[in-house]
Image 1 (cartoon, rainbow, N blue to C red):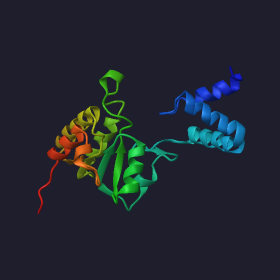
Image 2 (image 1 turned 90 degrees about the horizontal axis):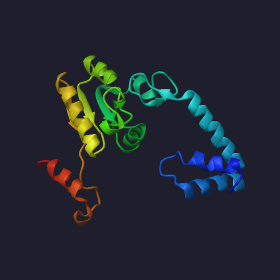
Image 3 (image 1 turned 135 degrees about the vertical axis):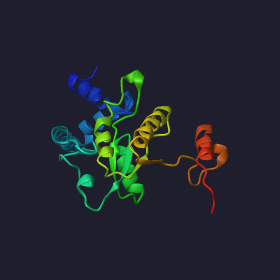
Image 4 (image 1 turned 180 degrees about the horizontal axis):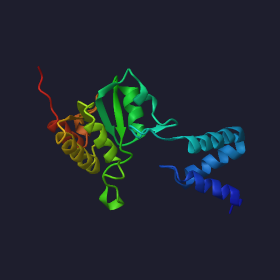
Length: 198
């Protein structure tokens, strides 16, 4: 219906998560009608990122260097290793907490139906980190989904077999939340993870 270049751009935007046909069309028209300079900046930034961003050799975080800034930092506590599913999880923890340890990014979770197992999650590299003797505690911060819980359980066993302490981040009722509006799974997790008041 449109120019083949317009159609191609709409299709290109649809590769992004959460972007459907309408959103892709709006973004395309916005760039072409009102912000061609912004569109050019987007093209250049995307091209540079695709050419230069890879994974850190130690933690698998997205990085434009072999070893990312967090792994290189002497200010980080190497005895604490937080395992997360994605780079977005690292950013969320960094922005919302005062965690000063290091990370390991799985780039996913166990999903046998999708063919994602230990090899795809880089668990051989994680085993090397645990075997080094440097890690005293592995903090499991996988998502509270069925797949995330299965992944966390596997990782707990991996840590236990190496005498590395493992802990799981708490899940439950959000601050400011009201119990009547909290879903059953979240409430169940909150009860299972309850703490003694001292």
